[in-house]
Length: 314
Image (cartoon, rainbow, N blue to C red; front, side, top):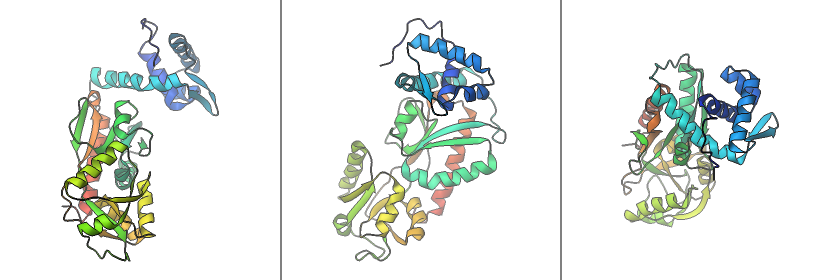
C-alpha cells in the first residue's frame, strides 16, 4: 500500500515531473538534461519527495539510480495525474510529427506486434524521425493493465466490450486460420472438424481467463483443441509447426507473413465463424493529446494495409 500524506502543500507539479523524469531516465544527470534544469534543482526536489513519502525512492545502481518498490507503486498514479494536466487542462496544440521529439509506449498483443510493428517503425523512420517507441508485448502485465496503470500510452488488443475510461478505435478483423507444415501427413490445404479436433495444437500462452474464453468460443461452434504445447512468444509457433505434425491457430496476416519463411501451408476454416476485432485503446483523459491521436491514426493505417495484403481476410 502507498503511504499517503494528508498534507500535499510540499508537492507541486514540477516535483512530480521531476520524479517522472528520474524514473524514466534512471539517472539524475540525464533527467536534468532532459528537463533543461540544473542537477542541484533535481536533487533538492528529490530530497523533498523522500521526506514527504518517508522513503529513499531511488537507490544507487550501475549507470545511475533504480526505483524502490514504493517508487514503482507511485509512478502509475503520478503519470496519470500528469497526463490529465497535460491533456485535460492545457489547450490542445498542433502536433508536428516531422519535428516532434517524443517517446510513446505501446502495449500490444503478441500477434499484432509481430505484424504491425515492423511496418510502423519503417513508417515512423520516414515520417517522424524524432519519435521513439517502447513496445510492451511480453510484459508481466496484460496490455489493458499496462494502459490503466499509466505504463502505456496506447493499447492494441482485442476487447469484448466497451470499457469505462477507455476510448476504443476499431481497427481490422483478423480472420483466424490454421498453419501446418507443407508436407503434413494429413492436411493438404483443407481441414475438417474431425481433423482439427484430432490434431495436436501449439498455442500462445495466455492468462487462464483468456484461455477459457478462447476455448468457450470454439466450443460454442462445436470445436475443441488438443493442446500439446504452449509458448510465450508467437514467433516460436511457426518454427515448432514447421518441425512437427502440430498445427496452430493464428491470425491470417501473421500466418501469411510466416508461411513462406518456414514452408507452411495456410488453411482456411469455413466452419469457424467470427473473429475478435482488433482495437486501439487510449485512456479518456488523453483524448486531446494530438500526438497520441496522430500515432493512433498511423497505426490504424498500418493495420488497414496489413489486412488488405492478407488474401485470406474477408
